[in-house]
Image 1: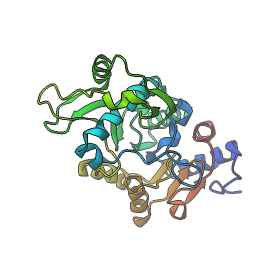
Image 2: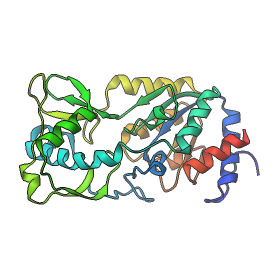
Image 3: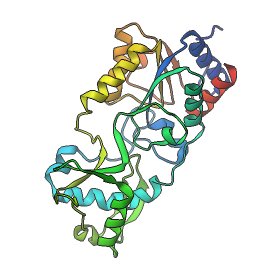
Image 4: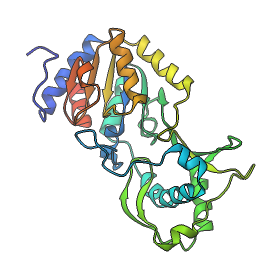
Length: 285
């Protein structure tokens, strides 16, 4: 079996050896990560093994921007979900990728996650493609504030809120039984202009800033190859980088469980657990 041969799913050590072979042949890789990297930290992913939604579709940007009712419901759910999200800590997958950066093998890391766990693990050069959940932005004046401050304001305005968690979500949201209190939920306004507040993340239906896309494409162009970890690539914001790499002759390795949108573009497809395979690869390098 050569270094790039793909072992059976579940043979994490053999998959790690295959990834190590890929990394030896490509000394500087651009890395793209998705929700599958953070599941071991207790943050659930969006999609199942077939790439289908596990939950109801997330809030759409235009609905959030236009309708106070949607904003009220989002922040009520987020008030509960944030308490779970904020406690998440980096797992061995985050640590392994930080170690690859320390070893000089990572050209740049682009993450579709909004949890900042790569940074907590010590990774220094990270592009948060979909923004970051630990900040809040005003839709009118653009003022940026801390999510922790928003949590205090939400709790102060809604001391009797009775929402209970049914299921936590990957973006700090939660499926919550709002009961009657959801209709009376009060949402703080911007302290500078009184405008509506939104988490500083890219909602579904919202465009990723062009400068961020350009930076990510530059990382792919400057790298020897692209490594995708824990992403189904079902949304175009991530898939575009795999397509770009393939169009420019860059080898692509995809690590993660389940089907991805770019499987046919992959030079190496590694159907295994992100943490186990990454750490097996590190041990083999």
